[in-house]
Length: 317
Image (tube, rainbow, N blue to C red; front, side, top):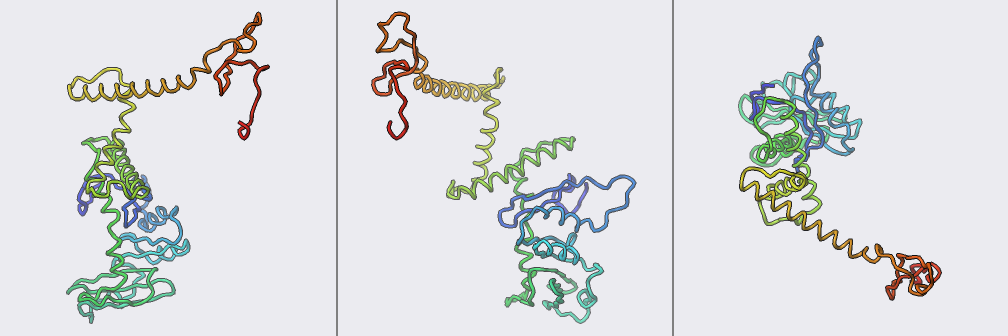
């Protein structure tokens, strides 16, 4: 698709639901375009938000821009115990004229409209500009006491609106994408980038003290993640690469893996050395046609048969 307002104007369009604080990608959906011989989809933004937020736990708040926000969407999300905050396009039919009319409105003036569960506010930040916002989270006409006199709804929107764009920027900074004309490859590379970032968010939440004094923690995490994903393939590789540097890297990894494998097998063999041997019983070895046994006494380490041994439980042993 071609979207001139985006930093990457050409690309695959993906609807995303992200956490506003950690930028964790909670749910995503690829836009596949309109089906052939069908009418254009009406209320597409509303349908997308309802689809992405379906697995979202109750009690959360969804922030979206004016492409998605409608009064009907706020009501439907409230049935799931999910609140909505977002800007609204001024040509929406559910908006009354008192909200969208620019006449008799001063700069930095706010006008509120309340229903049973939804609040709509219009705010004039500067001359000839009007901002309309809708919220099912706020139910009072609170206004900031600063110079801009911004409403609480718009402050909340500005604080939580950049989740998807921030994720797009973070993924672009460290990416495995390569120039390609095959869209499945481009989509798969994007999935890897987003999955790696989600893994980084989970790792830092579980281990908050990991490299706290370093500003490039994500780069270190991605390097370690890449090594762990590639190392099994390097160990199984039979032919060495032609480049000297790459050849030395592959050799070192294979030698280290072999030495570690030998150490582990030697420990296992040392533990099981006594069990692999079979000898005649210490008490009846003088008897003719005596069989060999693998059982060893745990105290004197002598081989014994069933007649000269006994079972002892964990408490008695």
